[in-house]
Image (tube, rainbow, N blue to C red; front, side, top):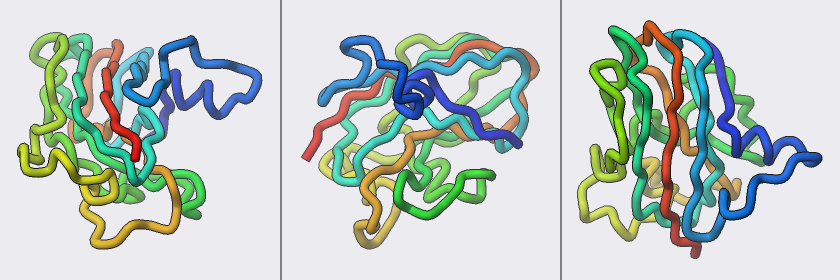
Amino acid sequence: MAVYKSDIVTNEDNLNTQNPSGTVTKTGAFPKFTASGALSDNDVILMMRVGVDDFIDSIKLFSDDLGDTGDINIGFYPGDGSGVTIAAATDAVDEDAIGSAIDVNNAALANSEVRFETKDHTTVNQRVWELAGLSTKPSYGVMYLAITLSEVTTAGGDLAMKVSIRRS
């Protein structure tokens, strides 16, 4: 099991690197991760930080065909200020709050809406902390929107998202 970071999270962590204009805005983000080889079950890819009070209106998923096997979950991990060092899938707030066992092995995905894969339309006005299944707002201000492998892949490739957010 490994923890990886998308281009956006990597750039945010490196104060000497700036994200390209338009990559992170109040209304959207486009995080991307490139796996150089197969990914293991329970690998975690931190795609982007989201405020706990944000509303997520859409998550569109794009991926290469990652081989003969491979499913992913999309959910949340505690962010900065939580006191949690993410080292395992068990550190998740809810690893499949948004999507569960999404097939990335049968064919490439292009522009697949996954925001409502596990949460229906009645959650459209729920804040991130509510989508993550918490009963009260956490003391920390951000969570990671993340991909967790629920089945190994047999090939590398790109995973990307187009995320539309409303900030409170």
